[in-house]
Length: 505
Image 1: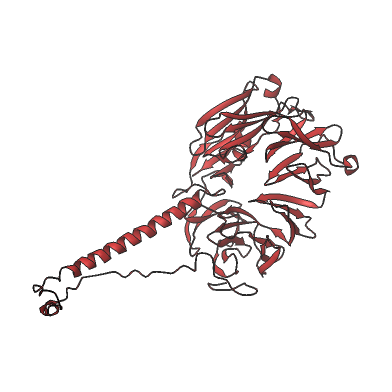
Image 2: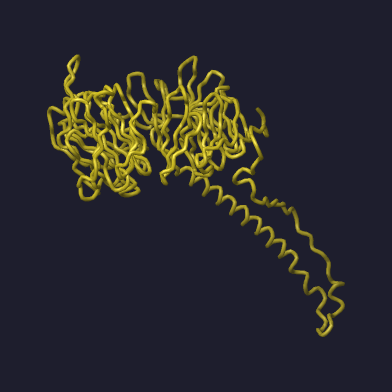
């Protein structure tokens, strides 16, 4: 499709940001002085006659003032452009600018692999590390250099844990309910011990949820959780723990974030009949704006949606195939047969929209609650109403970037597509490498950045696209040995064939 192609169903709307008046700036190549002596010959009534040539001086001065105004105006536009780029670069999901070529900035210690996967907080990778003596610590690594910023030891030496296969659990997550720079880590004494055909799961006996300041590691909260806690998440003013109770039960227990007192608990019904077993390691609880999603262990893997007050928003079900917390909404996807998404809003309202909503990797809020849905056709859905705004038969990938009222999405053509969020008008459609599969777009503030993978050679590369017209301004090949590239926090991370991670820049 070329420029101007319209996918809209119904009336067109002006794209956000295009309704503003445009001021044309005209260059002044030279100033012309006009002879006005004749105008000064005749005195005005009631005034003494003016001297000849008295008023000629203001004309070149006016030209200088006008030229200065143009310079100031252009400077103002440049400042606005820089401010817009800086705001986009600071969005969650954006990445730091890349160099003229991709190079290895630093190599990741194998024990910090899970830490890197947790993403970045305040320009640092923050997460749990098991030290050589079995101590548990939360550490922060500068995402640009890998240098350790701080380390906070939370549990002392443990020789059994030092030999464990996998400490449980490995990740930390943001805790904006406490502080905008806070990170919450479940510090557990549970782990998987042994090796070969014998693996012993040691449940947590004294788990804590520790909330730290990502800037310096200062402890902001330390909440004791019930024994057997396998996962925990902060929502509202409580910590909700997913507690495994052998032989097959999992219970959600909410603990006050300040006092540590139990506020409520919820046990999903009929767990024995569902086939869940406490030996599973995939129990999870994830927070969204007004509650949590509880996942029972396999093989049932039922999902339950609970409010922050313990009320059941959605009964346990195996028909949910996945979930995502997007902005102030919770998305729950039905199984792949019906391909529907249920959307919960903070006010408790619930709507079902067609298709699988594409999770935005980066979103500046300019499209409001207009989302893209994909089920053999690409739709724009208003999740406030559930209504479809426009649709097209284009097949697209799994992710989208939303910036300035535009949606940037890769297609199976393959190409990179930019559409107006509300009207569906195609702003540009740029072909990419026909042998490549494009990943989810992101931005560095000034460009669209896409990680792609050659379907023939299997090697990754990165393309950088102009935001305005989509043209490729750079194609970046990975360093030797890098077989996969992913985005982790604000950085691109390369994986080597032996499993080693390297941070790219």
